[in-house]
Image (tube, rainbow, N blue to C red; front, side, top):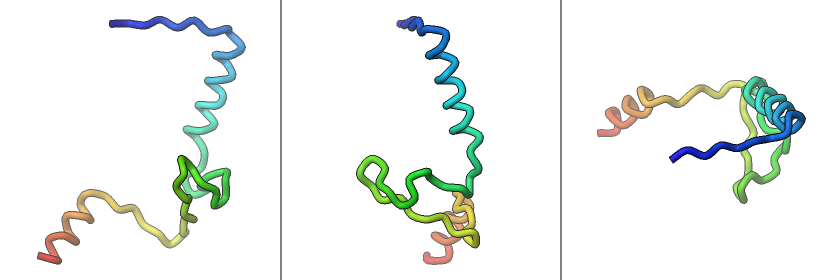
Length: 66
């Protein structure tokens, strides 16, 4: 099943600008809300010293616990 949507050119241009701004926002900058809630959940601050938790780290820590 396929659905075709037709948007006014101005609306489509504005949506593209907003999408680009969101995609290319600096990752460490965090949210524009500064501690506000998103979908009812509090947003936690991002620490500069924090690291990325990936599947490899999760598996390593799980194996150490076993």
